[in-house]
Length: 288
Image 1 (cartoon, rainbow, N blue to C red):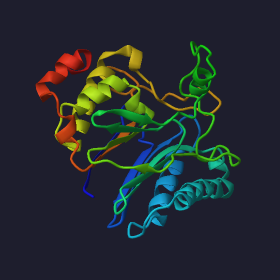
Image 2 (tube, helix red, strand yellow):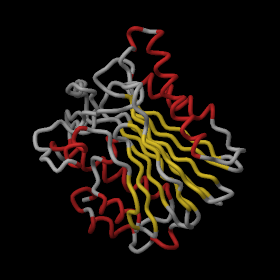
Image 3 (cartoon, one colour):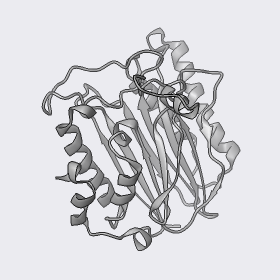
């Protein structure tokens, strides 16, 4: 099974980039990880690095995958964060989001797991097929049918390191099809796009590198032009998210963002519907 990827991570205007990304593409299986350290509490970048490193260190791309192994990778990452919390009092409340994708290349199977509000999107034949559900207060209110007006969209009720009694969310096993596309990204990235815009952008490119580049251009244009998006995406844990001092880009507070695009087979053969110059017609406010 052919797998091609593109990765991006940007600091925005924050003092540090608390995001971590990583991947292993082995002979039999592959693993992709995106983590976003929780702002407002000390050690978010430490928690993100521990989670990323623990999963990648334990993953073996020469072995086939199963649901139990994937659960062990994720619970192992959470345990490693909790152990570090006990060792260092200053890091006792650190936490991180996680979104991870695991692909068995021999059997064309995919599994994923997530904690917090970093997301995985799956596109099949060019259209959104599945997306993870955020572990956030806003998502809980939506699911219960209540208004979310006035609620801080950055408040999480679960992430790695925050609650030892909870576990991450795990997908069922998915049989892959040629042309499937995955996007793993932090909230600093997905806050800027509707699902329709993600679909439209996918229809205009021939490679994951082109797709990421197109979305980055749209992201940057929007974030530097619209005060409504300034600061979107800084997570908090049961308290308002900390916001770093504005530093540049028109004095706006722009969050870190990170993403990994994973293409299985040849998506462009089923998704390419428009030329790249058409992008301005579909996302004029972001590419104009």
